[in-house]
Every structure is written in C-alpha cells, then in structure tokens.
Amino acid sequence: MSAPVKFPRFFVTNPGPCPYLPGKTERKVFTELNGPHADELNDALGRIGFRRSQNVAYRPSCIDCKACVSVRVLTEEFEPNATQRKILRRNADLTVNACRPWSTSEQYDLLRRYLQQRHPHGGMTDMDDMDYADMVEQSPVKSHIVEYREPGRFGQPGKLVGACLTDQQGDGLSMIYSFYDADIEGRTGLGNFIILDHIIRARKAGLPFVYLGYWVEGSPRMNYKTRYRPLERLGPDGWKRFTGE
Image (tube, rainbow, N blue to C red; front, side, top):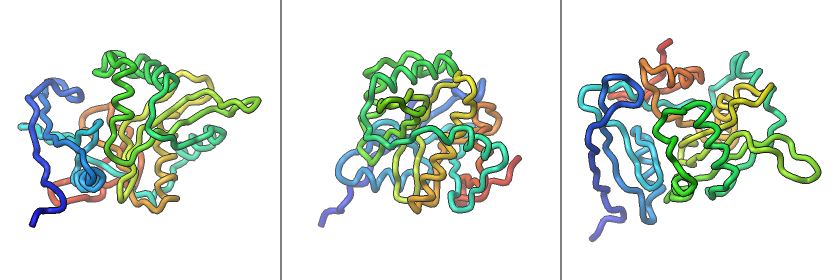
C-alpha cells in the first residue's frame, strides 16, 4: 500500500551573508512544493515556520543564530491602536481587489519604484520583469495578488499604489511580499495599511491568523511587525504570545 502523500525531501543551502544582522551568516533548509497535495504541504510547513518562494518552501537553519522567528497576528483579538485607526481612515478611499496571480507591467513598475525608494541596495534590485512574473505566477498553491488603487475616474481604474502577493492557507493569510508607492503626498502608512487590510480580510473570511514572516530581533527593518498585537511567535514549544517590547 502506497502513502497518499509522498514525504518531501529537504535540502540545505550553503552559508552566506545574513541580510539582516551584520557579521552573521545565514543558511536555509528547503523543499519543493508540487503535485496535487502542494496546498496541504504548504499549510503544514507554514505552521512550523516555513515560508514560500515560488515553488519552494524554506525556513532559516543557521548554525549559530536563531534570531529569525516566525510571527503571526491573531485576527479575532486584534484591535487597531490610535495610529492604526488613523491609517485606516486615511486610506479608506482605496479600492482593494484580490486578483488572480498574474503579473502586469503596472505591478512591476510599482515594484521597481518601491525597491528604489525603500531598498536601493537590496537583493531584489536586479529583478527584471521575467523574474517578477516568476515570483507571482510560479505558485503551486492557492494565492492571489491584492491590488490597492486610488479612486478611479470616468469608469477607468485608479492608479495602482500598492500590491501584495498573498497565499491563502487553511488557517490564515500568509503575506509573501508587499510593495507600494512610498512617496505619495498625503498618503503615508501604505505598508501598514496593507497589513491592516489583510487582518480585516482574514477575520471576515473566518481565518484566525495573518502570517507576517520572520521577525528578527536586533534588526530595525523588522521592528514594524511587533506593532500588530496580539502576536504569536514560534519557539521550541510551539506558538506562544509575543510579550516583548
């Protein structure tokens, strides 16, 4: 009798420079997502701290560091604070649509502007339109692009100001990668709004979690993730409430 799901094979990358903590090296363990049970495998791996990139699920497996910690928002208990309520009001006029995972030139142009504004020396700056298409379209699991647009005029869609590649897992939404226009006058907090919108969307869909990826203690780039409470972090004993400052 054969097993209904083939047990995945896992591999480990060679060590390389850590993009978050100077002087540290990173290493990842990964496996391929494919076949008719890719969604189930992605769900199971997501609950133990894996993230998806195209058809690969990975998680840190560094030899001398455990700073990368998976975090997720508890959607039912989340209550926006005063700053977050202000961000929601400021961007309430945006039109939000969950689209099939198909790349467009408009999305790619927005991504290029975002990388130039926020991550000019990051590892994604060399991404061309075909690389972006692969990131969005090479998904073996249920995913979509959530687009954020300014109000349209004369029956035409408004300007695209934000987008997020999102996986829908069995217990929540996993935000794979979000990007937005950071230089729009009078419309600050777009990145925060995209996270808040995902929390609201997950709650309405009856999904208990929004997965935010990895929080890295000591990395200022990751501090924003701790603003969304209650938050759970994955440790040796499973998911526990985040109580740090």
